[in-house]
Each structure stands twice: as structure tokens, then as C-alpha cells.
Length: 512
Image (tube, rainbow, N blue to C red; front, side):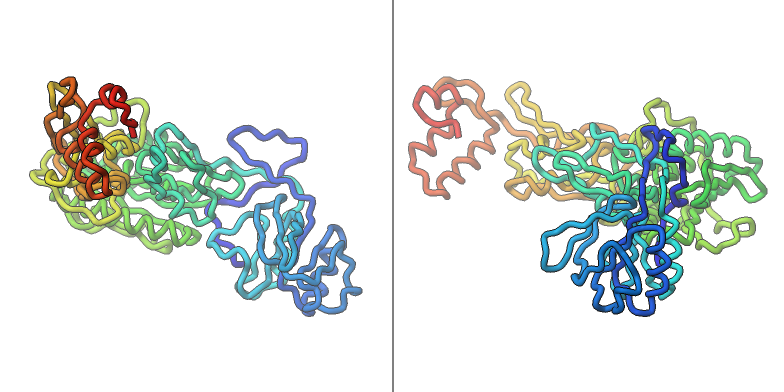
């Protein structure tokens, strides 16, 4: 079968079984749409139609409709299929009609649903085994339950800020296309999500996380295992086993092994936390069914992590991705330099991803003497502000989704400050800057430089020429006047841009 899943398939349950908020229910009465059927499939169609409704698309290609008695023998071709097990919507060429189906068998050489992880109940036969496709579809009849794999905290989501899209990393990596933009937040469809965890690995703030195993559980387990390990600086190997229902931890001769149902749940914040707690190296071993998008994301994040560790003098390959077939009982990690003294972390009980990451990096970065560049796309870094261009309009501070840029006015001065530990390199500040003064600088810096606020621009506040009250930064007033001239405004309008709002109102000048 041509189905790359992320975790175990839903389990069959009794219709009367209750499903809690941590689970998702699928109800299928068996109505099956068949796309791409041919005359060679007549026997399978006849068998399937014996106990359920069958809808055959492009029926002329099959021939002999009298040989099978489905509820519908459609001449049209299906042009799109939306939905999931028990709730598919079928759209047709040349018609606005929508047909409902519980299960879809797509036998076409080029299936309508082409994304890597197909919805449950959508059966493809990409390897040519048409009989197996019919057999799998026949089994999707009844009530099924699966876990709600994800947790979402919209209050720390950086997807949108003040009408500007800031971060879309989770949307980019979901192989099941279960995530969409909901405006200010993202929306995850629990029926489409199959629990690969890539969204949690991609999310820089921790707004999206794997519900189980939780970050807190994994951090506790790895710290306990490292404390029990007899070797000095053990290797931590994390092995993905998709049909596991819970995490298994083992301390052995070669270090610590953690078996986990979704490799991406053990994300970069836990890699650094384990290294800060005394691990010598981290080996990540994905399963064969890991979606390609997830694997590519892991490769990219491991590369960034190794760049950081190399900059800290810890070696070039402290983290490694093993092949799915590697014998982890025999494999050894390349030698790395001695681990640092184990640290107790994190102290924050919230266990937010960014908190765990920053506390681990604070431990690891203490020996770091100078910032080191990271690859483009990293979620750590700074911004470069060209002081000759920045007019202190404060647009960047307003749009920053993580409050890493701060605008303040004090003692006659306007100031723009930046705190690197908060920055997720989303680029929203650079996109809204009207003068092109901001650019991203992915990097890893010493802990004191990352955690402190630093001034990136300052300018005296200009005073209203009419009443003497503070109006705006001097550079901003000059820039606005120049823009007004460029747009053809007369001298009176240009002069009035220097007034405070009260004086402008008194003079009958619109605030805009």
C-alpha cells in the first residue's frame, strides 16, 4: 500500500464508547468512493458492494455496470476529495454537486490527494496492489479512535501580529496538511493530524507541542537516566518506534536509550537540555515511516545544533541522525570532547520550550567568547539595525510577536531596545520596516549578551513648535516631512506634520 503514516492507525471501538477531549472519533458507515477503477476491478467492486454502498467515479472506464449494483455509477470524473475517514467530500468535473463518502479508494496512477501523509480512510494503490487497496478500504467500517496528538497554546503563538504574518513554520512542515492559518492563530485539524510531531519541532515558541509524551515527561526521564548512567558523559540515543503507547527508557552499557513514538517530540530544547545535564552526544534514530518533510526538518535542525556545539568547542558531530536500520545496540557515537559539568535545569516550572532552550543554552554558552553565525532559517539570532536608516517609527516593536523589540520614550529621548533570547528570527520586523533598516542575523551569542536588553537606536524627541509638548522622535519627524514633500504636499501641510495632535486639531489639520 502507498500510505506513509506517522503513528499507529486508529483502533476500532464500540459505537457507544465515549471519547474524551484527548481523543478523536471517526464514524464510518462504509460508503466507499472508488476512483480510477477498471474492468479488472469488477470482482473486487462486486465483493465490496455486497455489504455497503459503493460509488464508482468515471464508470464508463470500467464497463459492464450491470455486473455490480452500487448505489451510484457515475459517468463523471472526481476532481477533488476533501476530508477524512467518515467525512469525505467529493467534487466532480462539470458539476457543483458534492457527494459524501466514508472511505475513498484511489486507484489512479496520480492520486487526487498527493500529499505525503494521506487522511485515514483514503486508500491509495501507488505500488499497483489494487486488491490490497480494496481489502484495506473494507476494514475502514465502524467506529475508530485515535489520540489527539497535539497541544496548542494560542497565547504564545507567533503566527500573526498586528495583521502581519510572522511565523508559518508549522504549516510548512506538516506532511498531513492538517494545519492552516486561522488569521491571528493557526488551526490544527485533529482528524487529519497523525502525530509526527514535526510542527512541535518547527514551532520556535512552543505554542504547538506533542501532547504525549509531554516535554516535562521527556525532560524528567532523560535527566533521571543521565543521573543513573555509570559512564562519564553517556551518549543519549532516541529511537522512534511508532507503535509504542508510552516512552521506554533504558540505561545500558552504551549509554541512555529512549524509545519514543514520535522522534520530533524530543526536540532541540531537549537536545541542549540533555547536553547541559551531562550527555556527551545525542543520536536520533527515525523510523522508516517518518515523513520526508519531518526528516528534512530534523536534518536542518541537527545541522544548526552541531554548528552551535562546534562554536562552543564541543566537537563537530555532537548530534547525529542514525539510519532507521542501524543496530542501535552495537552502534557507537564518534568521540566527542568531555561533557561539561551537569547542571540542574530548568528551574521554571512552566517548561515552555523557549524557557528550556534558553536555560540550556545559558549553561552551554558560558565558555563562548564571541557570537557565531548560524545557517539561515535558524530560530536563534539577532537583528542588525542600520542606525542611519532607522527613524524610530516603532513599527518593528508593535509587530514583534515575542516582544523581543521594545520601544520607549524617556527623559526626552526615544529608544529602541532588543533582547536576543526572545528572538525567533521570524523576520516580521524586517518586513514592516518602512526604511529597510532591519535585517536578520541568525547566530549564537554568549549567554550574557543573549539575555540582556541592548539599545539598537536612540533619538531626541522633537517638540511641537507651537506649544512645546513632545511629539515624536526627531528622525521620524524629518522622515515624515520628506515623504510628504515626495508625495507633492504643499508647504503648509509639511509644516503641520511637526505639530502635536492637539495643535493640529486646533489648526483644523486632520490627524492622518
